[in-house]
Length: 510
Image (cartoon, rainbow, N blue to C red; front, side, top):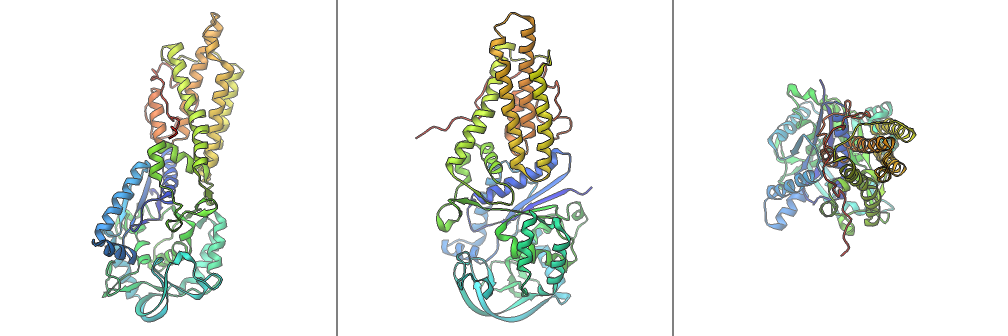
């Protein structure tokens, strides 16, 4: 049985983890966890892109070997995954032998088939982007700042016959609406392909760049970073081996909009086509995190460290915020004020207080044991109807990659439980000696506990640690699947609840 295969762009080893890295991994993780909870086998890959000129230059400036710099990045990015509760099944480094072997195999294949040739080149080169540029890359006659320093160079290199596949790629994009998600990003690719594309330079002379995979047919050159990095998605799952078909083709490849064109939507599919490898099913393209309307970047000094926020507010709060705020595919603005607003309103007030009061009232009025449902009157009917509506709508949003809307539905239900508690007022029912009020009290406690269980279970793809913790507080343990877990039930009846806790402490002002 083929696994649901999902990948992120591999992160470049010449930088520290930032909000963009964190968001991409969380987005991919939410999809992977959702699929697992639906009962699907999943393989989730992330990793590091470790070769290239910038890594070599940075290492030299620090007086260390490039591999030492990459080892540091490996610790940092694996650490980020751990802190974010990312459930990746594999983490690949492009310096690994399993990767180099596949890169060399594909390069040799294309060279033997005459799809790679050697030629002299004179043109503009961006060290920051590690790519050759054309006049059409200028904006208003100037090189965009993202290219950094641009210099004119002349050198002999190897080229891949990219241009001969241009018409094929246009046809593929037009014929497969699902290839690029959201669909409006398809226009960006087709606009790029309106102009003739050049053949792709796939090498760098070793005298200029030694930190790379040597070309198998010419040891005086190393492989250009894109032809190296883009191969990781197949090398990691055993290309050339029988197990490869267990994962390939990739179902979702998750990337930021800035690397859609040309690397992932032009270079990569053409490389795969030329090698006779099936194309990815879908490129899932997310937007940028902005601050005051500008993209976060080291050069502007407006980057946000995800680890700082996790240290102060916890992993689940961070995962909730970025998933709730960004409509996948669109840009979203980040500010501490907005983060705190979500934290205080949604998490501390709506969810945190609900869990605390449920545990507290169960302790005070039922000996911390969940009583049986004794009555079903209008308040109970309304809440159960709200749950049925919430479950269907949220699951539909999950399937449609509309996670912000799924969370909106879930927290509407959480607020519904809080309203139910105010309507039933267990603290008043507990003072009554009427047997019918006692039945209503027990029902209210059972209903609130069950509502909490359902809400955190449905939110598990986004807040997995919270689900584990709250289910433990409710005495019902962990679950690996949603099978039967999203139905209103008497699962908790008779369970012993834990003492009240504060799930989302209020931030202390300095």
